[in-house]
Length: 162
Image (cartoon, rainbow, N blue to C red; front, side, top):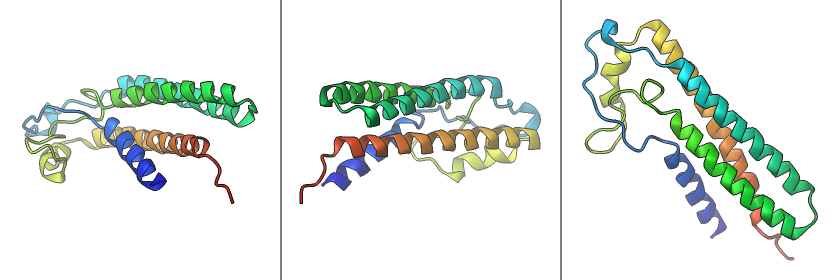
């Protein structure tokens, strides 16, 4: 049962950090009409998300150190709010001109190569590097969020009695 709850929480996290809906647009016919990813705006969102992650890690450190159950409960509530703020910051990384390219969501609501092939095939090598940089940073943030969720789950699960 605990595993089911944990898996549900992980799935909710991953889905909440994905774009809710990005308008499907026809891919550009050539690289000259393709807009470059907005790396500066992405880095600003990344910086905000990293600050949230740092706060969460500091909170988790305090949770580990406290012996007072009431203090731990308050810290867990603060950590939960920090997780929500971090997810909001991560969601902002999918904004227009950042990681959310055209065709991310189809009419069927499914993501896939079929809608993105035309988009990526028209990117210049520099634009591809920018997209790869942003994806690498985002994936690292997702891993940190998953780590925080696992630590939180560990503190929320009472120790097994033998």
